[in-house]
Image (cartoon, rainbow, N blue to C red; front, side, top):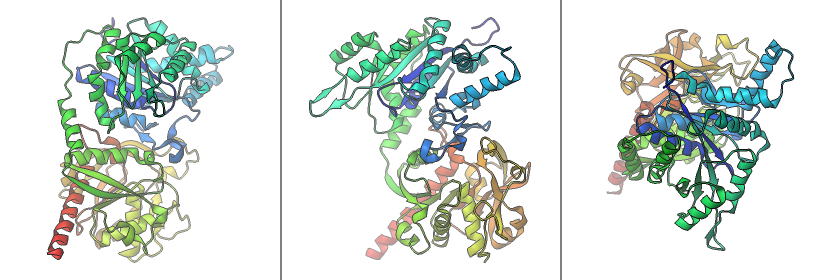
Length: 552
């Protein structure tokens, strides 16, 4: 405890080597979950070495989804893992890029803060990195701050971050900081052997940056025998008990259980000189994994989007289906449907065997007509439907065209000349020219209509959800939609924007302007996904009963 009565945080840095995509974020999240389950207050932050100030302007094909926090930060998708595992919100401070570091330093230089000094990578950039690494730890809220360093050891762009870690580890002292290095032990099938040389080279490269890892987490397809652990420890200058086996798992949600078995948390606490005799309480987590691993049924739900080639573009949606599937004791099998390949002519062929359809978020004109065709098919055939952000907007356009009879109805985003802009740009967005960080971002309040489907799902009339958009339902047409049977069941009380639409004469049809997938966690699956999967399960059961009746 510090002199001011605040907690004094300790720091864990997670680096990676040999190859990318080893799962630093999952290891960091799993360790954080284990420490949290012991009663410690833990947060995780991600430092990314790219020049973009944030991922907000990155194409989903480049970087996967852009994850949005309550405070409106556009961040790396790993923050989604952090929240899903820890069940606690993150913020702007939890994700920092090289672009943000340089932007802040250059802004200070232009302001004259450096008093004419030459601004250099060392010490000015590294000092800024260290300052941001310590920011969360200095709030007094956390016992432990875990920092994931993006990229691989050896990448040119990662060097300033590694230098900052070296300096900070020295400044903090022996028992206040440790480095976990995630590496790979490949298996050569032709030789029938696991090979440690890539790990040795990766650690040596980290040592060349002045950093000696304290714990090695070794990704592997096969168990590490004791003699191999000793060999790795000897050549990498760590204790054998600090060589942690990370076997491939069938689901990321098994990793905390595997890390508990490997005593990763115990080793970290020992090296941080934290005495903790509490048992790790993962009973609820184990129950979730058991339900996830033993589903009673399988559902096929179509995800209609324009980035389906890269599933990470819809990472939070996919994970939300996993959470909701476990609640409903079923496995949700996502059928990835490219919206460009859909049309009114082939919709039945592509979607007839689905138990539910989610039309996903996105931007731009490509694939729009396919999304509209998907909405029309599920609306007319009473298939459970869930639209998110652009998916809700496409439901509004489809309804305007095919129910209200406004064949020219469109969104001003796709057709700036349309006379039937049922989706229009928000007034406060019309004067904005810069694209980065200027959308309607973060958590906003929504009031739900009593006895609506949304009200029944949430169990309350006031909710808060995260947003990321520039376009909204055009209030000029509100009365027309309401008279024709569309229920505008969710309204933002501050600016009277329509946030939720639904159809009362449909088994399950709901669209939301916000992104509920960003708030679904293992311990708190989002109710919209839970009820959508439940509706899909009911629909699938009805189909089976009809098939059995016909065959009898």
